[in-house]
Image 1 (tube, rainbow, N blue to C red):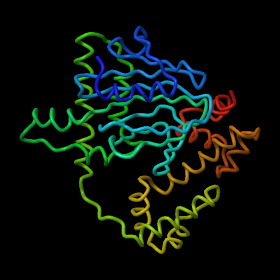
Image 2 (cartoon, rainbow, N blue to C red):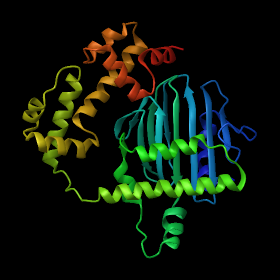
Image 3 (cartoon, helix red, strand yellow):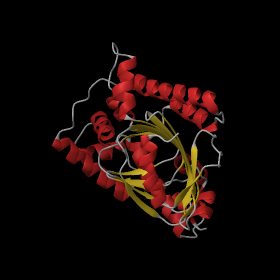
Image 4 (tube, rainbow, N blue to C red):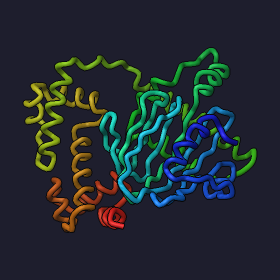
Length: 320
């Protein structure tokens, strides 16, 4: 059954070289599988939609060249778990990392992203439509209904949502069919929304917006980190650059970027590591030192957490 959200994705899938394979049941017979048929990539995109209320999407493909994508995400609230990914979102700029749960708010500005060549995009996601979160939920729970938009916004991008990871992996690995599959997917979508809402309530304490002066100081610190991310960056030095105390710097930085200072530095180092692995023949140990790690094993551990691949696997994929 094709949902309205699924129909909206079809033109973009065709534009990127995908064609439907109605008889391909690699992720379950109730969904529709699309195959990368052009010369631009390999792999599959599986979609299951129900009652114009939700769509489940499984990505398992790669592009043969670095690919800039821009497309409109239809009005929906979406949650996705990335097992493997390498690229950057461009509006605003942010590195995409493996092992994270990410929410999207569709129906706003176009989504712009740069995906790195030959690196598998492996993910599982759920989109719920306005018909689900503005009509169906309200009708089912008129006394307790709360619009889930802010809860989805709160999740943003996190590597600390194990309950959602387990749920989405269960959906990806399920192979039922018929009414049993319909009931399973309905239940898992409701459970996913429940997890997001519960998480949102725990984080519902409103934080005051950063002032323009605070934002300017965080940008100063960010620029310094970008230029010196391979070096030791003591918090005391960053606090002096920001003209803030250490605790306030940590709080403002996380509020502005959605991640800690340590996580941001690691993201910059991993981006530079990807570039060196794909563009040079430097030994992995030398790359590790050049991006800020004394130990090649520590670099390899963090790199795999970030991309889903070891440095050696990444280099082989990037050079195919």
